[in-house]
Image 1: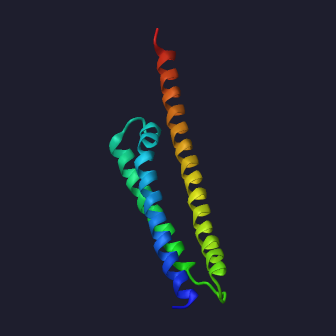
Image 2: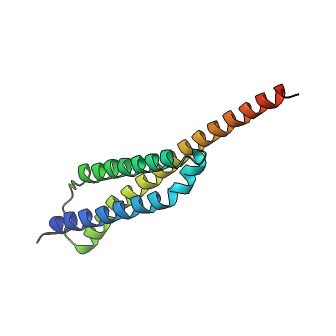
Image 3: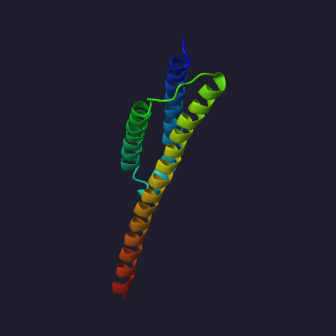
Length: 129
């Protein structure tokens, strides 16, 4: 077996395992954050959590598959490890960027929801005599 075949095999296995692990971790630990952002509405939080997990799978598996091509001539174990580090490191950076983007969007949703609730309470307090 040549180094490129070994590279492809290791890359596919490691990225698939990493994608599944991170998706499940975020799914499990993100529920309380979503409940907070959506004022305790569990059905909405669960739906959003499932949609985020599916989107995570689609984007990351899609990226992993389209970026699999490696145009270098791998001649040694060291080159193989370096190539894997670059490819898997890129995927990990994408995970992090997606996570921070999603957290920011959910923060904004939570803030908008809290602001609306505060304005509603202020309006009610104004008219109470």
